[in-house]
Image (cartoon, rainbow, N blue to C red; front, side):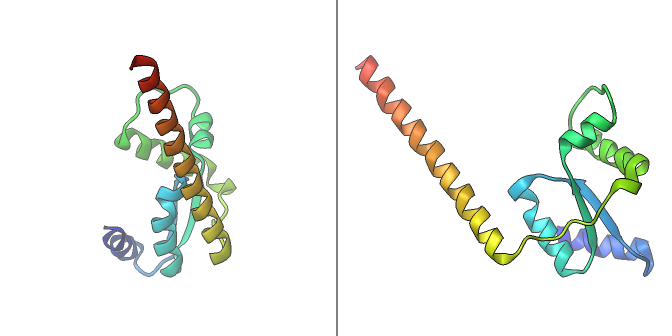
Length: 122
């Protein structure tokens, strides 16, 4: 699906420069960032909090509304955008290991709480 998006963007750009801007979603956006980087497409990842704060008080939340908000942010604040680059392979490995550890700690806590709950009710 990302490859189709890139193909569409290149077609729309007619050989011009492409600069993609998206919300920073942590690990979820790494695949997109990796593909954009491998295709030599400039991109910026902006924190969702920055986008929300830049637009003031707004209501509603879904993908369509989020896309419009990102579009408005780009239109108003394009002068502030800087290209994002992929971290080094070593840093990516460390981040991945930390994410896995965080998930294991969370699962361990859930099991501990379940055992404690079972002891109380049994």
